[in-house]
Image (tube, rainbow, N blue to C red; front, side, top):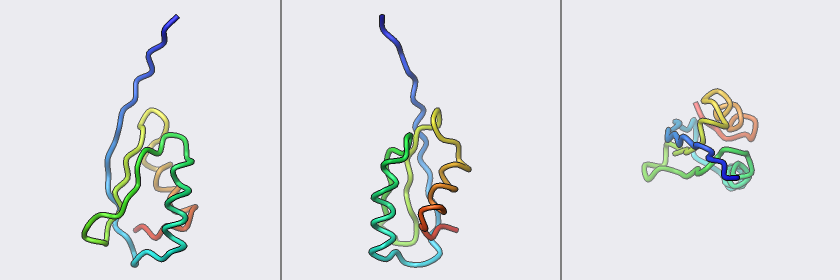
Length: 75
């Protein structure tokens, strides 16, 4: 039996409230353990965080909440 599971990738950015520290970077590395979180990286400008996630697993408020819970300084 074959099952098809659809994934809807969403890409968004979040403004940072301050420059990232080493501790923030460690927190970002841990975010990859969140089911549905696909990619997180600092934008070249240095003042935004790029986030890609699976919309079938996470909703926008859950993504933002997870970032806040992990101490990542987003607006």
